[in-house]
Image (cartoon, rainbow, N blue to C red; front, side, top):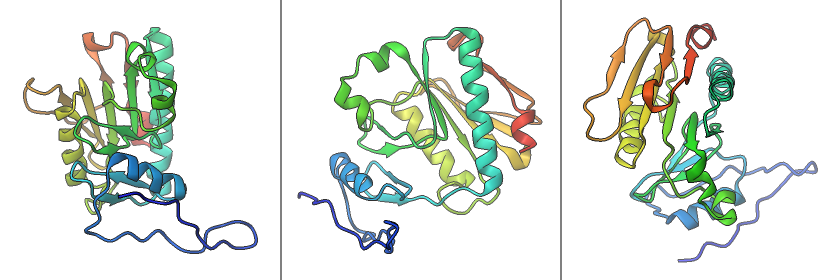
Length: 214
């Protein structure tokens, strides 16, 4: 099956007039999914391991502000600690070993792994699972950004090789720390005020109070 890049009606300013519509039963390869994303740059999409497209929705403004703070804090901590890590935002898709294409709210990849990719692989969905993934739960448990759906994503990251995962739950000011596969169950931290990656990423730590306050 080959997907041609579809044309979409636009207004005089070049804005698309029609929303992206995909059949629920449609199954795509990662390559086909990338073609769909390129043809619909305003759509927020992910691909699960079975090839089904996950329709994401834009975050609310409060969640978006928290996510921006998260990214800034991670970047500053990586720089201060001098860690050889690449920082990625929520628009970065990764092609995981199971064939899914997921976009963590924030993620870190060891520089050595990033440099091992070809230029073409870097321009597309990088064919790897990030070393550290962070997801930020929305206030509602409904939809792909809800806590239940994000726990499934965290489990998928871990199964695909993530070394560490942080699931932040602002409404509860709690964090679930997901270790690497085979390292035990997630650890829940109540009334969390900071996070430290420990010996895995020495010196990497973030202040959660700035994120909780929105």
